[in-house]
Image 1 (cartoon, helix red, strand yellow):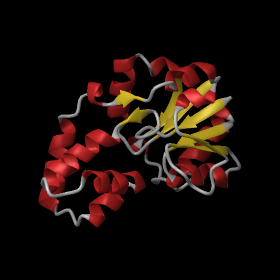
Image 2 (tube, one colour):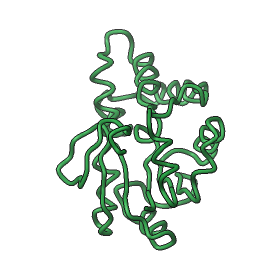
Image 3 (cartoon, one colour):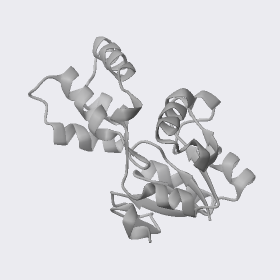
Length: 182
């Protein structure tokens, strides 16, 4: 089995850190659960919803630079799936350096044969170009993501899909916890 993974919210539980940052920028009156839910749609959706100013965006960027790999905890059980797969690849809107730093911190860089990041020039998801590129190289059999936009490109290419900790009508499989996989 060759698996294409989303990064944020799929391999690593990054939303709590991003929720904390956005809450800090918006102020204590902002509802953290609502922030989390908006971020789960997409970062740009949350930015639009809260009408983030350019000054606030700069502050967010500054705070994001303070995030360490230790702040990005892997989901329980995901490493067993990485070991099980024949090949693992990543498609993410994160920077390559950010992804590699986190993977190295946890010793997980050995599990991935390739990745497409925001640095590679592909259009953002749900455009299927990055998925198509990796599918042609590795014959992907399953795409795992936590948002609908992570699954749409896979569906377009005929790849089976799995939604993690979410519910969408296009997913072939749904997981709330990776320990359910085995």
